[in-house]
Image 1 (spheres, rainbow, N blue to C red):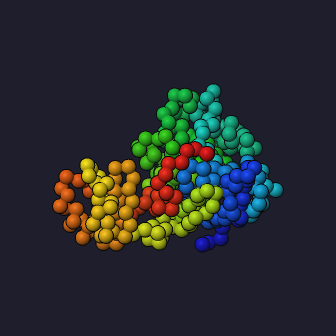
Image 2: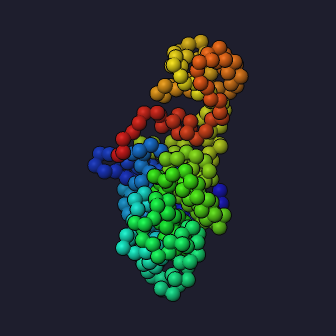
Length: 307
């Protein structure tokens, strides 16, 4: 990997007897999007908070843009852009005013900020909403305004904590388009997400966390090929669950059950699909293995409550 603009080494964070981040290390290169995925309580948000200097690690080190956290926290933050899970827009200010006031936090002059506002609003497809207040915006518009606000200081690195949660598909796709543009411009992104299609679309590399530990790291395609069989056949319908313990099990490398669906993982699906043709009342879906399969194999199918 080319030289890193951000490096976290051996990060640990404990709250009492609970270790929420346990010896996590990663690096981010210029123009790269590193995705951090994992179930609730895996340590993603705590890791982001340590990267931002909002939470002090109990062990480990963070360097960013040639500077050391927390010693140079202010200088680092001046070159970061942040979009948090929770909307932090000021409801009393218009879109343009939100950008102006936020720019002042970085010590920017009003003239300098005002010169950037039109292009930032255009980037967010909000030029027509410059004088509207956040309460008048849709969820997707608010997220794009938050992204535009995070760019007001022209940061080299963006930290995005689940930036598209709660958005409808159209709004998510527009957000993805904007993030792709930023990567093409040479920005670096650290992204946490629960959307596996988002991770596969945006991320150069992925860091998989579970129970505070790094359990896998690599490009999406490499991780899928390392951990999964190439073909997946999903079977669902009345009587599907019985197949998970029947003779068809021998035609797959691995079989999993989730709800009313049986997942057959195999290196060659042809024999399995032929055998399934005798069960015409069942519905089947044959597809390549994807990041969601990887996520579920590495972290399990059990639902985790928010930690």
